[in-house]
Image (cartoon, rainbow, N blue to C red; front, side, top):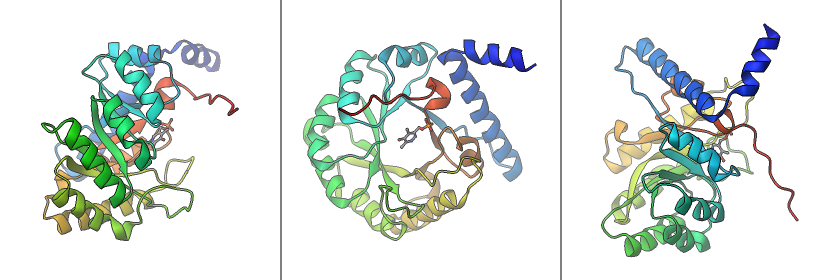
Length: 253
Ligand SMILES: *Cc1c(COP(=O)(O)O)cnc(C)c1O
């Protein structure tokens, strides 16, 4: 048994790993739906391809995948012209205001920027996006520091509704699509406090902006905890290593 499992996992390529994650996404969504007696809503799977070569992204693309997530501006603008134009790019890294112009010009296929963490960034992005692509607002999410760890980016839960309101009412180039969180590392994948916090922030934001709750997405769940996040109501999961394998970061020189 053990031997055959090892052989199997060593020959699994990206399309197989992607299919396996998709299957687990569907199963978790079905389990939530049957528990709550709801229509199953299958969350979006964003394949997080940071540090991975374009060939790896193409393997997932050829298997039918279209949503990809990247963390670094430079890496995204190098990769995006090498991929087909119908790729839906999600930017999920920390964005400094001084890199906004570079990102907007370098990635016209940007579908969603999930990491708005200040009013300053929202306004800078709004301005840059409106002048570059006035016909299409950019989907954005507010990143919430739900775990309260000092090292994490994102706004404090108490500030979320206000920032959402600024985006929804004053940033014509942006479309508020939801909230995103990373959550505290938990290797059992069983921690739910951060997911609860994000859901509570969504309630406050929806009330403050006069929006339907369901019109705001919840981007939560990564390789270690995406099934659990889906059972908690995630509508968009960001999965990297379970699809593309472990990441190897080059040593900083
Ligand atoms: C790297 C990253 C992911 C994917 O992490 P895995 O554990 O490899 O699935 C998801 N979200 C963010 C914000 C990331 O930086």
